[in-house]
Image 1 (cartoon, rainbow, N blue to C red):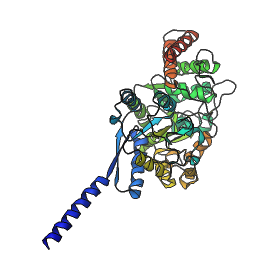
Image 2 (cartoon, rainbow, N blue to C red):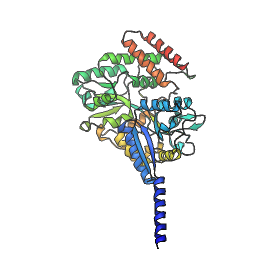
Image 3 (cartoon, rainbow, N blue to C red):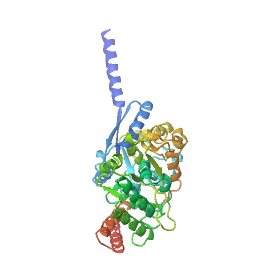
Image 4 (cartoon, helix red, strand yellow):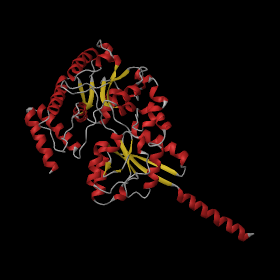
Length: 417
């Protein structure tokens, strides 16, 4: 009997150890608590029902810091410092794939890519292999306090299909009527540099990858428009992300023009429910310019050196790449408009949104996304954007547009060389 009890105890101990070993923690790096972290938390709940032995450890890391940490780890071959899953800006996809070949895990055969918008897949594809699970589509829109518009004698329709010059004139009337800024953006206008350029179906490089900063009429018009915005007095320039969010949450700014993912931050101000509306963005007053663009957009990638890479992809494929119900859950709270195509058939997309006065904002945003020009990003997207930001600052300090853009062109050419 004693031998039997000892045997049973030993078996129980072995089973307990085996069970403990079977439990796995996947660590995720991402940014924006109201959007990406929230979505990942909901995905963890979904996957817990599928695989209860997996725990998702979510770590908030700012986007810029996330890229800096990756670059440092990959350059020094210290990949053990990286997590199992990373969120990456779509604009950065090709740069990291080209700079660090073999650093990321190819997901072909593990993810059903037929269920995603093709333009998103391209952002993280090299030599016929695909390295990401796409997430949000980043379609841009004007999110505006309709009560502020009404005080100035305008409606949401007056802000629809307009030029930037018209937006500035409306903004001046809104500021006069309310005492608040019409618009808020982060200092430097970096988001606007990208959004406005793309809205005219142009990017910072030509088809051969050469910068066109000082030769493109669109880029010149974009820069002149941003200078007008700065000089108009209708824009609050937030010094950082926290002040940016606080500015529309506390009412000191009446609108933001941003990717649709900003909804998760807008709806935090519960006292403003019913006072917001959504419309398309202003356009340049030049031939070919549209009222549609995108800003941001991101995808999930897995480092090739992760000891849990197959499990990480299984988690991503069954949540962000395989659950319509998951997207219905996160849509109303965070505005996570998917590039996972089956999600658009869910009921949540057609529901009126009470925060936006009953407007069917997700149907509208999906409609906008169909018109976004699909420009081809390059390797040096952020470097080009940042040099244009420097050019705008130089113009504000007295430089001519031509000289500032020539300097930006030279700086990008030097970086590329």
